[in-house]
Image (cartoon, rainbow, N blue to C red; front, side, top):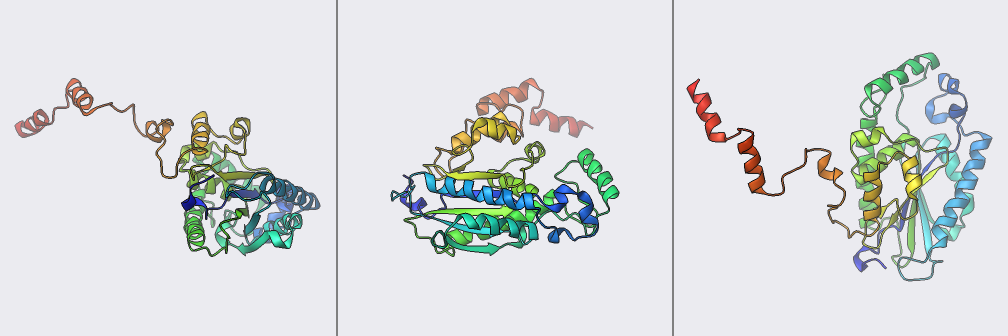
Length: 304
């Protein structure tokens, strides 16, 4: 059971990558077709239909977090405006009855990273090789976006998402489990997780892409924090590129109270600092040993 003030929160936020697209199958498709019009393949449609069945099992199988029957659950969809994500949504939707679907919304901020307009295949190969040397997060495609640009618009989307939740714009009955299903793209979904869990740029660089129609389940823990570790195993998270410290953080979030600070995951501070002194006296002693007495330093400057 979650605390009463947390009952309006969605039970799960599920991130889904679109099914196999013509561009995944043949990169030359981008030379003649705008990215947003790239369709899914027949295989991609089948992947989406299977994903819908798997997602339905996830959201319908567990006891209600709000204390009611486990049959009291609903879904709400957000979808990127690209053809391949819209087609994926249409197939996933076949796994849900009308009484289960609160609504759906197209959200432009969930679109794919912009790689430019029509893409010349050989040129894109060179550009993507350059991106690997430069770094995936900050490299900006000519006439397109960097992952950092995607981060900014995903951040804006999350602000809107919280307002929707806080103001109950999703028309959610608190006695029912609400599941938000976000159908988007591989990089956009990784950036979403990065922003949500406050992962660093370095940690982002190690993340592996979602497979077509793979999904990640962020589930609400007993204290009001979301965690990947409730639904997913350590092995899965490791395969996605999460470090041991990041996995430990996910396990902590599964039981943490909302707003708590995780002192058992040292990368929160150690990734930025050398090991910090335990007390102010230790800081002063370290300064004396290093010859960093502020007064003597000022005197030396005055002597010059």
